[in-house]
Image (cartoon, rainbow, N blue to C red; front, top):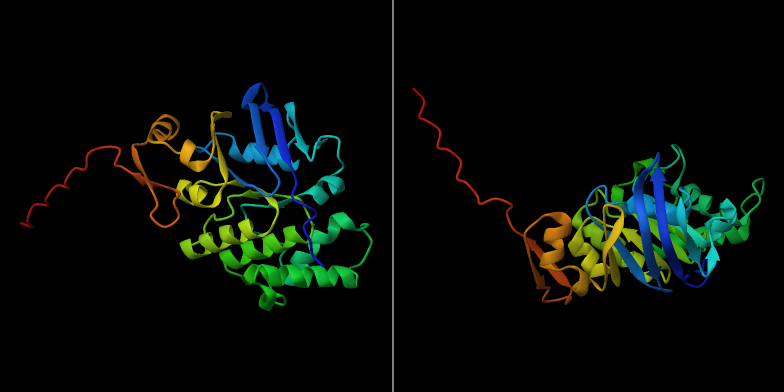
Length: 274
């Protein structure tokens, strides 16, 4: 049976990352408590994806450390880390020619020796994960033939069969229409994992995240509940935009209405043809 090995506790302590003397992250502290959905937001180039990669191990911090359930991830072997943290990438790509079932089965790799074939337990876990994300009917389809929303669900199923405590998701709603954005984020919240998401859409982040960390120039500019963080002052300071922050009448979450940067100017009236 596909399970979540208990939601993980994540703690980043003073995480920094530099390339050729240029700091992309500086002193980032972040906590995600077991079962929380925590969002990373901020302008382009603020360090969101770099930080996420430091968390799941494709980059090694040049300062500080990342702890999962109190264990430093830096000395962990790849397979050990993959049993704790599963990644849902921004680019919903796969290996050409594979079926959905085969793509999801790749998530069992951290629990098996490299020569080991899928056993009955693996087959059951894959089938259950596909049912859980609402994609059982897609099992025999080619992955590359799926829509964007279908692919994201399949990649979440692949992450689930890793049986992680922490999901790291890089723009999971990228290139999806609004219906699939809402469905994917609702699915993530229902999984029982601890979730760390990079998101660009602040209204989606306010709706789906328990807490937010705002990055600016590689540092944490603000953190807390969405209603505490997403203020008109912060949007002006971090994003350089004018906005009105209201309360959504149905969800109670902050709802951001962006205002024009410059007063609108009526377009010129073309001259009649001569």
